[in-house]
Image 1 (tube, rainbow, N blue to C red):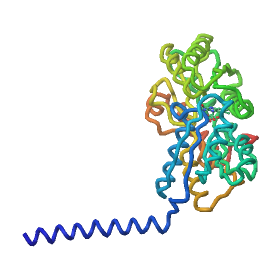
Image 2: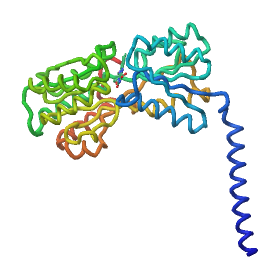
Image 3: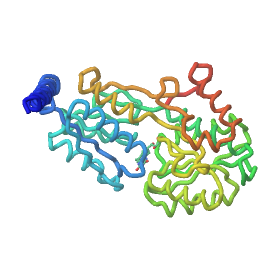
Image 4: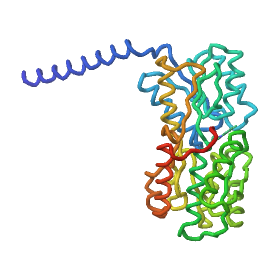
Length: 344
Ligand code: RBF
């Protein structure tokens, strides 16, 4: 009986002191009462890999310091984006607003004029120095080069149902400067580095959600002899998967590892470490190691852009000689023996 009581009170003491310790730690080091973060999603989270990664990364950073995060989806009407961003800033409730995509750099700049105290972090933003925001910018040219290289090598491999017509596709949600200046040229450079006879069939959905339109475009491209399509169209990507499955054709994925959604159909993924970038940038800003006006660039050499060679379906379905060529190319980039001339 006594023994029992003794054990019980020891356990109680132990738990009690843990509570004090962790409580004290929180109060001393974490300004949770003053720092708050809003994640502003220009679109919706579901189906948009860069936005999903942003939200996860911000939440990881915030959780580690016990800071509250509010996620706001601004929806697909781009005409409303600026007002919704300004409304968020006008609340004055958030120390930091985090967002993602190159169009948001100029919107944050404009909103900052009315709310100069508001701090912004734009992930996947414009690679331009500017005191209105902190930026993480990716080398999309390199990312698209990797996608084009994998697509072309696959189209020349012993995969089944290939047309042999040297045609590859890209389906975008919409056109925008980064698409035209970096992604399309990078994708073309990647495919032509494999064989200059490859040509690009480029189509535009017109929004970031219409999966039926994605299917329609992809079917017509596959019918015309396209063997592999790179979809960069948010929720509409699902429609491209439907078409590829139905017609026994192929896809290369962008931004996040995506092969699991259709193993053997989605061959591999040219990914961005956006979750890592989000976490690091938020921690840097909260701890004062970074400030408004700072820019970081992610590329192949510093590990933020890569062809994911660890995905199960990639290892299983992509022919071995293609995997070897991808692995060699990645090594060349990483040790600086291969680079593309222009930056982001
Ligand atoms: N990518 C998505 O996955 N979903 C979107 O809703 C989306 N909307 C975008 C809107 C604009 C105005 C721009 C410029 C880009 C958008 N992107 C979207 C593309 C995304 O930011 C990025 O460029 C690509 O994912 C390639 O990394």
